[in-house]
Image 1 (cartoon, rainbow, N blue to C red):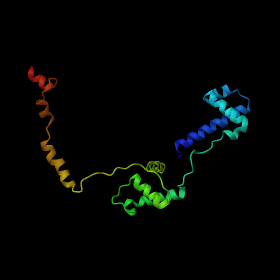
Image 2 (cartoon, rainbow, N blue to C red):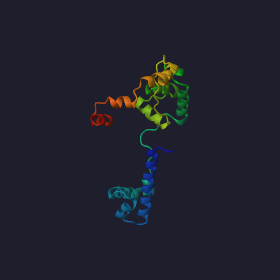
Image 3 (cartoon, helix red, strand yellow):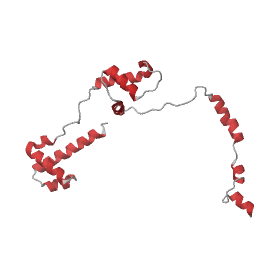
Image 4 (tube, rainbow, N blue to C red):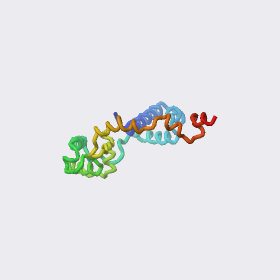
Amino acid sequence: MLPSSHRDRTARERRRLKAAKLFAKGQAQADVARTLKVSREAVRKWHDVWKQGGAIGLRSAGKPGPKSRLTPEKLKRVEQALLKGPTAYGFATQLWTVGRIAAVIQKVAKVRHHPSYVWKLLTAMDWSCQRPETRAAERNETAIRHWRKVTWPRIKKKRSEWAQSSPSGTNPVFLNEQR
């Protein structure tokens, strides 16, 4: 699936090229704006470009900004490296941070990225933020299950017990006692 920015860029290009066909047929700019549901100012600019260079001038210039230094091949190597886990690269815990990932990218792909851009790379790779479960190392699952099944039901108040002791004047049990 293409990123939404790419789909938008493609859709905008299609709309401009459709405008070029309408210009070639001799349609007025106002009619083109109504047909394509865009502003007259946008159509006026497209018409000026079309008059100078034809439909070729209305084609998309491509993705803005510099080309990525992280080629698809390098990106694949980075992903394989990340799948090995942080401890494979000398980190003490099994927790990836964007700072750690930036260090691995620099080591594996010889490309340096700011941590905020690393986050964009991860989302482009369909990786998501995962928080590790925090549990005490001393946690005793057997004792917890026993407490939940045996101790808690014994100490938990029953509804009838807490309803009778409620100081609320709107409690039905309380109202019945006053009558």
